[in-house]
Length: 174
Image (cartoon, rainbow, N blue to C red; front, side, top):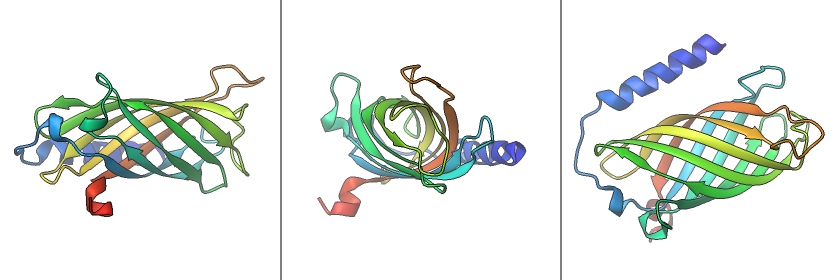
């Protein structure tokens, strides 16, 4: 199963860098709704599940210094849920490639899934995306969730994921 995930990651990354460039600027990035699917608990593979996530990501006009706000909801196929809010940074490599590290504290409910040791969990992640002419993005990433040892146990978990982020104005007609 890990080999399949690595092959998928390599294919997406290859597609990101093979696509042609065009006129896009960081300072006019809009806010986004991001839709994500991934493999929850990819590191230990004991409580594996599908992870789905929806996020709102602030745009260039929402920036505080280099940070943009974001928040969202995550759910897994075994009933776990996570609500979070935090910050992210977009790092641009030319007009098309965007590296996005992020950090968000949140509240976790284990459902029938993985016990992460506490209701308060911290998620850090990194995403590499290709930015299209309409500013939408397709990316692949890795995130880690942990309670930073505030609980009796702190098993942590990793998720490998694919994200499609669409400008919010396209959904909300702003």
